[in-house]
Length: 281
Image (cartoon, rainbow, N blue to C red; front, top):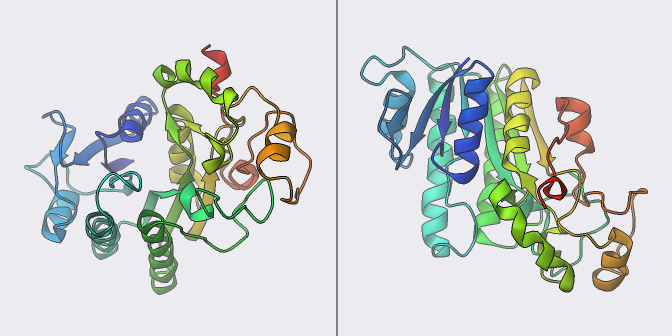
């Protein structure tokens, strides 16, 4: 496929671009910054005209897009003001989705977020492992935008039954260079409780994107995308007893299994994490 990849210069986007190209896809990176070249276009996604133009053609580099992977955003709460976060992220996503619909692009995969699950879990989760079954619980403007983006997608696929939009609720993105710091997490169970001690290796994030591009049917669906394990050496039972002693357990799990359920992604996308921080320390 010829794929427009927004946020291609970001931490996850750079890895997704590399992995999709390795898999044989033609990837055109789009971002506000990036290395000039045949496979990159500088685009301000908050400007709808630029988005439509970039998706249509740029200086004859392509004659149309088959699919969109939308990763561009202010990537977390607290980086910029709440208003700036909303005014960047929500219009950018609307413009990307709307341009794709107008141009007849019928396959969109985009970055939602684990934050819609209720992070930083100052109010405990309803159960563990958390999954996609309970309603969104945004606790920040950043997370609120992610929830609104999912609602936007739901309505767009209702209007256009042949449209496929997949929301990937990525956990905290890591690359191998980050793993040397993980050993320090064990000293304080509360330091990483904010996302139930979860993470995702960027290479496995790219795998989830590729699987969604290849197998997601028409319609909308959402998937938690996390590593198969936690960031901790300490067992889950010990962590939960200390931090969330009253939270019900929905099913059995292993000593260091992720508490961000990836069962739905495994079942419907064929996603299977291949990378763990434990292999790098």
